Length: 161
Image (cartoon, rainbow, N blue to C red; front, top):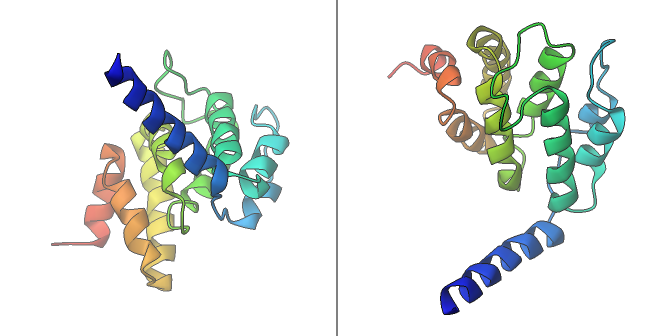
């Protein structure tokens, strides 16, 4: 049926776009120090940082999110999850990177699973860092954070209307 034909094509072109581009990920992420008991693999962080394509990077990001305990069945993780703060704090730094849009949905999935108090603290630090830089990418990052309910309080406290 012609409907599936087009859908298949648009899916393919999305995949091709992911294969042809790549996201600039802060290099510090590859050498993040993971605490004992953290299930995130250093290899996943390295592929996320240095992967040849956005597709590879997205797969690595999904592995990281899954290793932190977020899945379709498990939508919330405990604040005491080993490595949660370090990894989420590091991953937030991807949001303002040029071309990072392909990773935003997965980052949002992760942020929505983080306990609001923990996410609030991490977002606070991140926003202060962004405000200091004052670059156009800051808007991209803040736009993405607006879609995460737990991040809105932090955003509101920094950007009073």
